[in-house]
Length: 355
Image 1 (cartoon, one colour):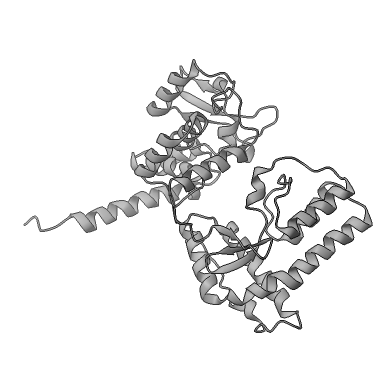
Image 2: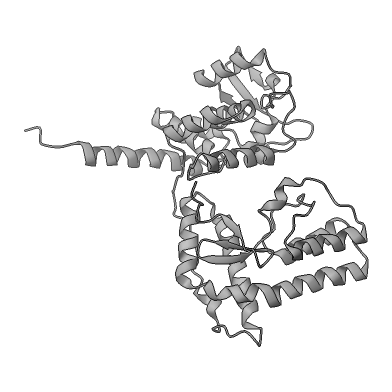
């Protein structure tokens, strides 16, 4: 399968650097270390070995932190998280960061220009990445360019970072999966992801809500599924809600209820449940990528639910309640998307005259 343009490809002779389309990023939150899920303690030697492995470009047994774009921030967060107070270790970490930024990364910055960055931003936009995600990547590029200007031995144009274009998300833009995409995802998913996909697309539930959903949340008599407060969970905007149990979802749940070995609806075949919502997102993203589907965000299933509801003529206020939107303006995006389709249908299909 051809690589997507925004996939990060490790640079062999430059550990920690990734080629993304036509540009390079100093980026550590993806990659090969994702397979290692052990957590390092606060041992000084462990901290030193971590940085050594990183500089050598070898996999490390640490991937417990949330996404951090710059390696410097990643290492600093690591030292804070594990309370590494030893001054020698901190100096070692800081020196490694300094050497990386000063020696390794700058030699690749020459490939970054206004055109390549614009292409990079455009491709991420097409993939369905949000404006915060895209602008975070922009900040990485700007930081690298500004640091490069300060290096005496490196001849790089001054103020080049000002050429990096700003990204503004189009208002009312709605990205969702096509019918074929949904069929493909469901057909190739395992039992855990099948349940998650059904709840996301036919109930419009967020990934955290999918993760928390239990069989006791389903009221078969009333035909609803509840999103409600639990011991270790509070719904977004602190609001409980009821979601109508659509026929396809009801049939799926009834079919699988008897064979379930877990109190949670979303569970693996062996009866265990995902440890975090991020596990569901990551496995869904991997599946979409393997199938060659351009969008890989689980949240887009929620867009499908909202759009499907609007296409079926459901009242905007009802959609707002079912989806848990705090503002009606958010719900109206789905209504406008449907209206645009109607206009397009008339423009392309109506031919000739009536009299």
